[in-house]
Image (cartoon, rainbow, N blue to C red; front, side):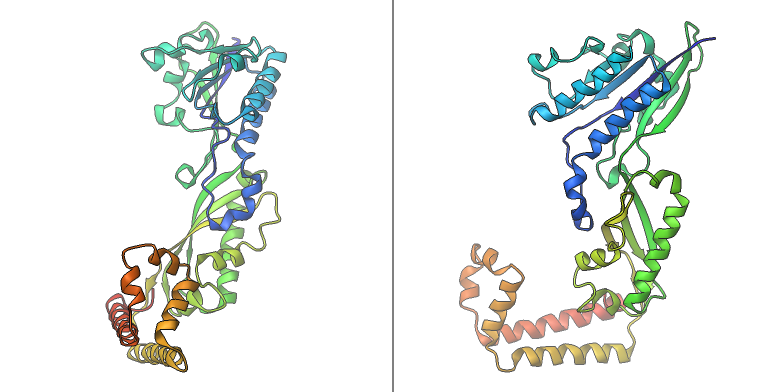
Length: 360
């Protein structure tokens, strides 16, 4: 019996930004093309699978953002029109100007508002109630292209097949069409003691991920939310002067080998969820000696008040503080006040180390 086939996709969201973190800044120039590429893959799929209709639902694009997205939609739906494939669109985003609607090919049918989703679907004869029966609602509403880590995992469209004129359970197939994949990954750093070991461990984790997901990553890049787990025996690996000094430097080093690859696996977000090892008495004594040594160096040959202002300025905080109610107190601070602050910060940090079990 002849099958009727159609593709169902949700939320093209052309021109919506990706939630790029510090680790993926180098990808930013290409980020605007991801939703466009996923939509192009959707149309390619419709043409190669010989479907009779494409059903688009949700937010197509920001109708106020300019002509690029709308011209692209007209171009892609015209490809369907040339192949004799109908396109049913239920636009739940911003309304398009009538002049733009007039530019779409005749195969495009704009579904009007109705009281329920079932009623809306019934406006397209080929897909009457099929989606409701074939696919759970939460899966039906999965966007064509993920835009952030909350939308991790495969994204794409549903290929629905049903016997012509026969009322029975439709067949369904989820087709991965996303041009960029968001994933989550963990790395245990318990036995890591040097920078070299950390980089090597990440390479092993990354290569393992690439091998496990080789079918998914072979033609698309991946942005990872990496969680560091375990218990660090040498916390300085993460807080060393030359290595991390903040997550940006760490991600830059770990991402170094991937940035030039087309199907890269980049760390987009980094979460430190490591548990601190118990702080030994010797470790506590070493920490305290280091702290007071640094403070003595800070105090030698320098006006503490000037040093405080320079430190705040270096961190970009001074200008903001001077624009608040704290400006007067800051301008009137004395040498004794600064020394008192240094001692108080030491006591708070040292107390925190004992309670938490070590540097975090």
